[in-house]
Image 1: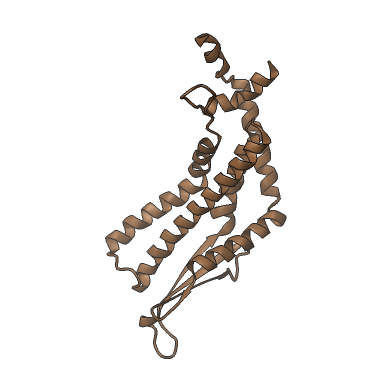
Image 2: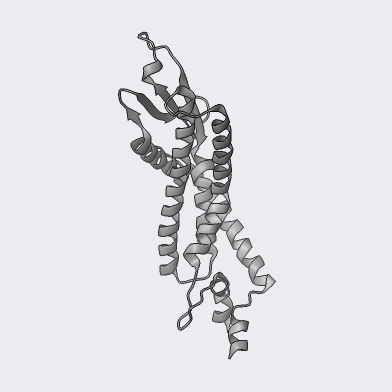
Length: 215
């Protein structure tokens, strides 16, 4: 009995290669959809970030707008009103980011991983909904940290130069992790399968499902 269970969860190199080929193909197709779906994502992403992070009060002003010279990029303008002169002059901090690199690319990678995974379509849609939502929350968290750090350069956050350097390193590490590690880890979480009658679950069991069907 144990031997049979062990055989069921073994994934061959051929199955892994076929899975990776599906991931690459789906990722490329989703990337090619950028002119259509990506523009919708860009507008939605900019709308959500503006709603969440924009502010205009007595101390600060934070605004989001499309970048003037780089299509698809967003420019954030951060102003400390207390440092502004009566004529409107004063220090302004700009932060630029690309919606495609920050949000769209990791989202399409996650979607490609889920769609390439052999499991029931109902479970696929649930995994897509939960994982993609979680990924957007993570991206917004990274963006919030970036805004907090950039605000320190116009006196809205009290950080020493040393702390700014350390937080800048941490921020870049989180941005890099969001692009690759986060989609993969979220994929592992959402496809984790707990077999019936067992206290154990396995990603390998899910990936081996296509072989079980063939048998």
